[in-house]
Structures are given as C-alpha cells and as structure tokens.
Length: 177
Image 1 (cartoon, rainbow, N blue to C red):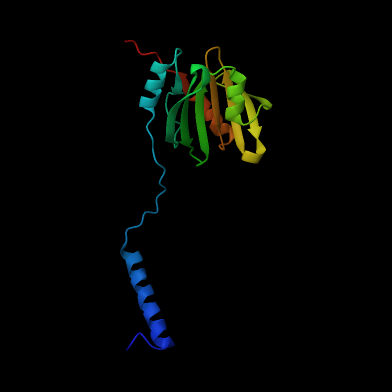
Image 2 (image 1 turned 45 degrees about the vertical axis):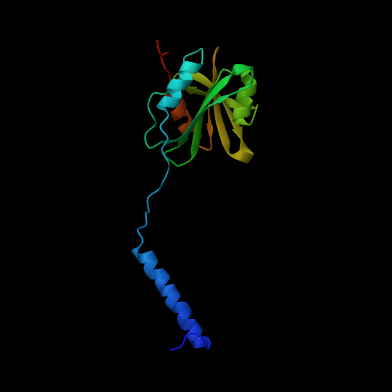
C-alpha cells in the first residue's frame, strides 16, 4: 500500500501515527500523585533570627497535612526585615506567615492583608488577632502587633486553618555566640 496517494492512504497513515502515540502513552510511566514542592525553612528561620534584634517567630511544628512550599527573607526600607513562610494547607488552600519589624506596623499589616479594614478579632491561644478580609481576592488575614514585631497569617485558607497556623507559632530563642 502506498501512503502517498488518496484519502484512504492518508487516513491509514494518520491512524498509524496515532497508534504509535497511543503505545508511547501506555508504556510511559505516569504519576497520579499530587506534587507539591516541599521547601524546608529551618535555615531561613535561623538566619532571620540572627539578623533581627528580637526573637523571631516560627511554627513550633507544621500543622498536620500541611506542606511548607516557600520561604524567604526580604529587606525593606529603614533596615526593616521580613520573613515569609508559605504553605499548602491540608485542604490545599494557600496560607502564609509573615513577620517584620517594619514601622509603622499598621502600614506593613495593611500591605500584607491588602486591606486596612478589620472585620473582628479571633482569639488564638488566648491572644487577640485582628481579622481582615478582602472579598475580591478571597484573602483572609490575621494580624497580631507586638511591641517589636508584627505577625501576619494570611491566604486563601479558611479562618480555622489560619488560626491553626497562628496557634502553631512560637518565639525562637536567640542563638548565643
């Protein structure tokens, strides 16, 4: 059979190519598992703790089923530093913990929350956290302002998940050199 003339020959050539692709797809290993990159943050927290004049905050343990997937330290104006820890939650929403000594604290919190409007408070481990919500971004935020640092937990995660991350936070002891 010549595959260079006529519609039937053309159709046969196309089917032969598709059969080859089908065999290739059948024998190629495929993963059906979810792939979320895991990014360890302990070195980032230790470095941040050495760079700032206060005790850094970080999760004492990751909430069950959560995957830490990003972390970084950023320098801002006036020497302020910020640390960002991102997570995929157990429900596969996004949550992020950010802390900074930037002043004014309200400006930093407003930028991280994408909102200056409070929608109430949430008690986490007996401490009040300011709640903020930005509907158009589906972003919920918890803010706690301390004398030397502002703590922000934000993301598309629901309120209970954000509170779970906030509850996991604790001060890290300063390294003695």
